[in-house]
Image 1 (cartoon, rainbow, N blue to C red):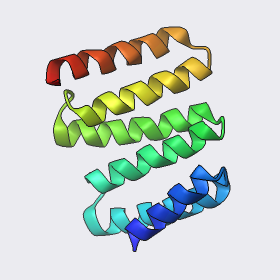
Image 2: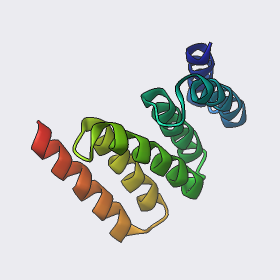
Image 3: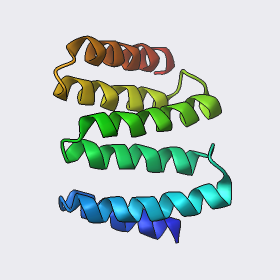
Image 4: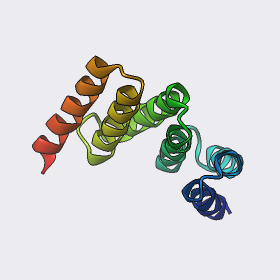
Length: 120
């Protein structure tokens, strides 16, 4: 059920219907946290998607908050050096860039690059 909610949310997000997308992401998140606990890959992925939803709706600070929640879980489960953490650093860099916080954008982009260089 959570996967279907997530798919519905992704579809709404892709169509630019961000409020409905958020509604379904939150339903998926609630189920995943109840089933798997707060520190699970599915929960991290949902926070990432919630961040993307806010990001695409120009709500960059809230996007960053959700990216950080995702990052915390991915780092705990995979460690700092992993493709998932590199992805989150990159999208956080994009959000900071949109906020014209270029120093933090570059910091996140550079960290994403370092991780990718070390694993690929």
